[in-house]
Image (cartoon, rainbow, N blue to C red; front, side, top):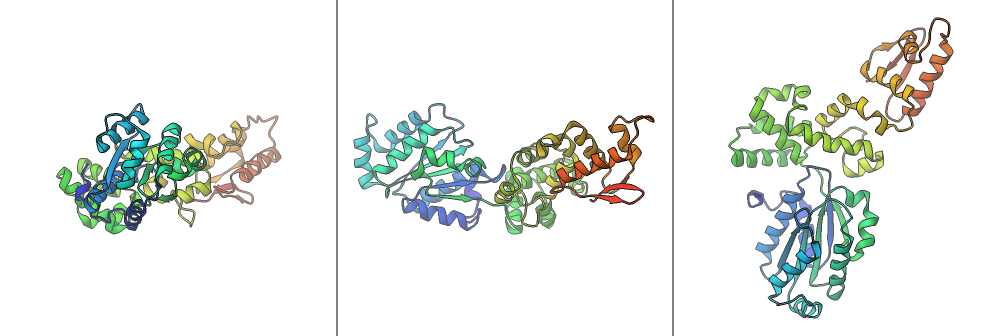
Length: 354
């Protein structure tokens, strides 16, 4: 971790807001899409709290590293309170005099019900001096009710951490250049911003590819999306496109308000791999529907004639039917109209608009 190299406002004004909430004893949950900086954000908040409020005790817990979460919390509380055995009465006495903030990182599922309930019960003993920060992935939004049911009082507020702007991308470039001895020019920051959409992990992966393959790879996005670890990062985000509704994607920042995908590289990646995801993106399509749609996607912007589609419908010279072809295209067009536009070209066939 190198959060000490980050400025205090690295993640924007949300950092100051959350520190203020925690200092007041208000428990907070934050979330974002894959690559938003989950681990770094937890470290950053811990670092700033320790520096600004040395009298506040900080308990950090990485849920991915602990098998018995409650036992791990109890052990850390004993280290802080100097008690011999975990005792709720002793903890209540401790909280009458001292503040304790628990920071949970790498929270990737609401499955930690027992831990949330345990922390919720402690919070009820002293709401002013005990607070919890839950740094989670996107599930804190998509499964919000499951989290709240387990610990209503430790999710006083739920906030989303968004993508970085141009200044943030330049800052990430500078930090990574210093950390890894890269030589990525800040003059490329604007292009990297558009390609990455400001997602920190995508920014870093693009810079890594530039260091490995040369700066010219920025001009070849079709090659860039196949480099590692960038391809892995894109796959993680693209998976959400197949799983979540349009409204959920907009709320998470995957889709902008104008209906476009936030990252040019992610848009290209999903287009290249679109056929692979058709059954998940559009589950109502039949096998024949998917075959027809695949032809249009592969030939986007080109005219598709009746003969090309008659083969998919297994038509022969004896069974050929223009009406059946038109009906099949109309059925597919109605099912995909929210995502694709297929136009009829009188006397010529059809064309999917790009």
